[in-house]
Image 1 (cartoon, rainbow, N blue to C red):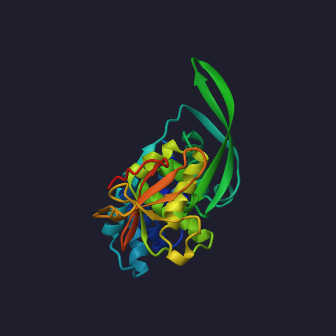
Image 2: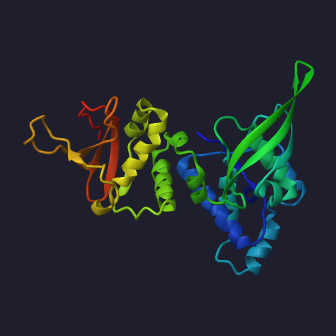
Image 3: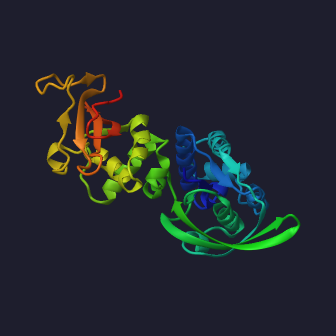
Length: 308
């Protein structure tokens, strides 16, 4: 899964108080419902506090009351406390000096916390980090020099890290690497629909539900075909007239007899579509009712298995 780094707007009170509260509420709800955490450096909070960028609640009270906002200071404190409870320090084994950063991390981020945000991104391990609470939705490159003290001997290495910046949770869904989030099917379903919106694909007529069995079965596909399978599941949610011609759904029947009744469950009727006619002849097995398309499994041509 992609690491998420706490960005400037989550480490400091910036600009309009109502806009700041909107961001904090959105990120707190998103992180809580998806059980996600944010990476920070060990000194991030101290740096923000030293420069009076970490929220001071006496000042928040003045702004809330002065702006006649329909929110209590206690409520704001509670939400921010829940959000900061999801901050996790990343390992800092050395000194990171970021020499260049394009985009908002290089030009718009507050001077007090910008270096901490960039350092956390450089130190994050795994796929491309996502910076939550940035100024703009974009991709940018961080270049840094990392100094480590290994067995009493100082070493110097160069580091280049690509990051995805997401001002709000919906932006995160737009920049996330979908294949890195297969352990979170609900997030994947939302993210693929945002991709279709960006492509101008018509609105869905049905909700997309991805069962864990579907996501785990994608591992049997070549990596370059996995995203196609998720996309095909989303396209099956379109009105019939809007679906691609290649997605010809056929019922999965109770028996091999062509006159047998269609298999039914609490999720609706069972269907299958062909994803690939070559090689193993991959198929997508799914359930459909009036509300949702529930992707259950990607399997080979000869299988009729379909989890509920």
